[in-house]
Image 1 (cartoon, rainbow, N blue to C red):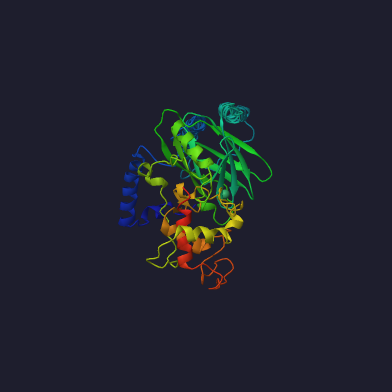
Image 2: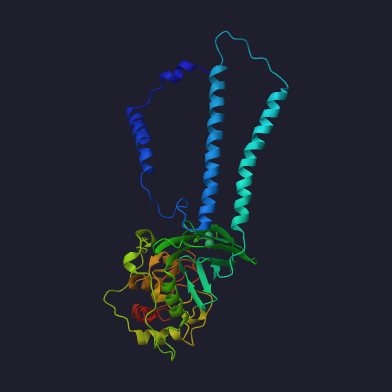
Length: 403
Ligand code: CUA
């Protein structure tokens, strides 16, 4: 046995002692705030509450088991510790009572865990009610496509959900595995290649309209960590207004465009909670000429004849029918770009078009700015082939008309 007395003499510096004491005192204070955004512990749907209920049962049972086991362990360590002059303990073999006990107790513990677990599995896997709102969710590397087939709406990275109405998510992947998760409402459930998954819940009818963060919860490649989305739970009448507007083509040239349109509904900017506002700084090595004003008409022409239309859809613009990237029909009605990475404002939209791959690692959207270096191919975009800052400003002015 090592010299036990040496342990006592180990000097612990005063700074370490004080820091440890302060940390021990401050730790409980960390629990004093009553609300944390993005926490599964504040559920706002029946699905969230079912999971939360199960988690609390298991936390409480686990705590009881932990205390009993640790108490027995400590008792044994102290009661049967080695004492000076004591002979070595005699090995024993076979104790029927003990063996029955340590088989029987875990069976009982597992029974108390298994019953509520299985009940919750069945509860959260039931078929959605017939009146549910359907949202088809497609996971892409690294953004979310949302389709509302009952409303003929397609959008990206922003979900509007009516309060009090069950919503049935039909989950599919366009490439690799992703996982759909809105911590305070429901999930996680995987989006699996060549397989359709379902998830449904009802945002609580009693709560005030609010905005939430959604995340991808399954590692899916380079930008998995920035595959966010936003969720707006709104009054049913506001949802209907939003959906009617989103279903409408937006292109300013279209004959059907917004003639009788009231602008639709958009979650009020003033009510956005701080936790849904992106705070990632744009790359320091990416800049844009100052004092450039965009021209929407010029931008529309340029957009409609450029590479943009190969990937993006703008319903109402007959040239723009791509389906690889996010649907841009109502891009100006969204609060974020790059799947929640940046705010949807002039500065970030311009930088995004100029060098998207610098703005978000690994994205499919190529670097378009003249003389920009593509971070994936490491090649420089030729001055003649790339977009100038003026051209990008024009395209942004056009996109900002697509409300
Ligand atoms: Cu998609 Cu991680």
